[in-house]
Image (cartoon, rainbow over all chains, first blue to last red; front, side, top):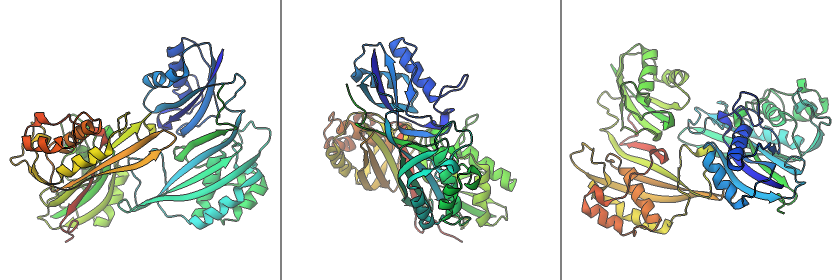
Length: 258
Length: 258
């Protein structure tokens, strides 16, 4: 038996999220189908975490056990040849049997993309949340500074969570104004959050609250107050899924090779 | 009667090109339908040029005559509200009645995007031609230098053209290695061609030939020889449509307002 660890990018627009759901087209379903085609095995894959419907991934990581003897150098091209073009595998390695893509993950980075301005870009409409009025970026940056550190994120967590502890550490919460398009008279804002773990909808609720701060509907310092409230009702709405990308998953030694 | 000039971006992936064709979904069809909904008129629009199936536009320009009294400031939002999200209007102006978006165009810029590397990016797969092996960019740049200037472009023109003269002037032919993605271990090459006009498939045939030069199948200086041959058979294949974007159309006074 071998443990195979794969890094994959996908455009989530066409999928009902990552996790297998009966009768729905999901990324996991596509990956398991491709692996079954290659190995003949009914494999169940385990990802570093789920992504919701419409959420994208630049560097999602998953692992699975297999009896297949196919060398790791062959897997990528073989699976990419079988997978739809909105899912691309870009790294395959054999890892120790005890490696687990979720439990061994040390840090994760998510990116949320917002387009402000007169119109949105039709070429990137599926990966940028469109917010026509401009936003107060300084206020949003100040608000993000309160998110950094170890906190109880109950306020920024879907009530549907099953997590026992709501304490997570955010190592970095950064806002970049990535670029401005003079033609479309619009600009793109990227929010990067890196933490040791994320609760259900946590990034999207933080961004939904940040948007209200950027609009001037709330003060930047409200972010601190909302965290302390430990009440989902204190925070803003859940931002739309399509602006979110699981950017990168970090391991102790990115992930170990046997 | 008024003459309205509109600048529009579109993702060409979902369309059978710009021009109306019976029974097919085209960009022109969508635009004319939206204008009919707004004005109640059966309007025929005239673009700066057609784009083929799968080709995108960042700044396509078209005009049409209308008896509508709706102020120009209202058109953009009204039409965008009706159009599918892969077509976005970003400028509307009233121009002199004699203005013609094709005949008055002084220069046009096209961009062709190529992704080289181990895998393509699923997020931008519909707008980048994927060419796994790396290319000799210096040879491609040298080849592009031969394209600049006034030439007979018969070799780089579909035999289906109806153009009488095949002489065009290329003001600039530039290759940028736009960026390198360390994660996907791939890079994106952008080729920009600016000229006073382009023959049918001209950019795509130039790029198809450039790719052969970048692969080392032809020498950079062959570009000069191919131009002189004035024979479509001397050039390389027509590059795939989806890498091409009509980038910008320039007018004497970008375009005049009444």
